[in-house]
Image 1 (tube, rainbow, N blue to C red):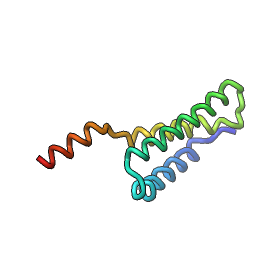
Image 2: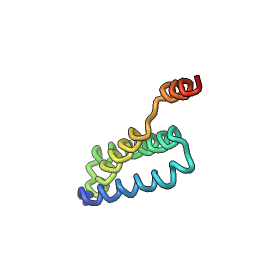
Image 3: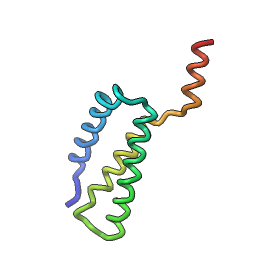
Image 4: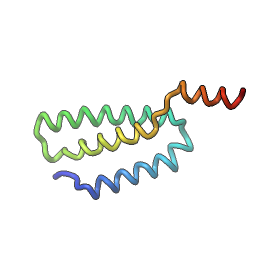
Length: 91
């Protein structure tokens, strides 16, 4: 049974709210990026296995992979860019 769009949307909103209200207060942006990057890699492997073995009951891995990749992209920041901003504010 595949996940419908409504369930994926609800899970996405819940993941973003969890990230905004919990993870941002306890972790830096780079750490949040790596959390979601590793999660998306693991879910990507499960998604590939789902497609290769044709298991429709496990098709929920595919939209969850896309969701974790989207959250990783939202929290991606170039460390050189952040350092340049910090240096320009000081001097």
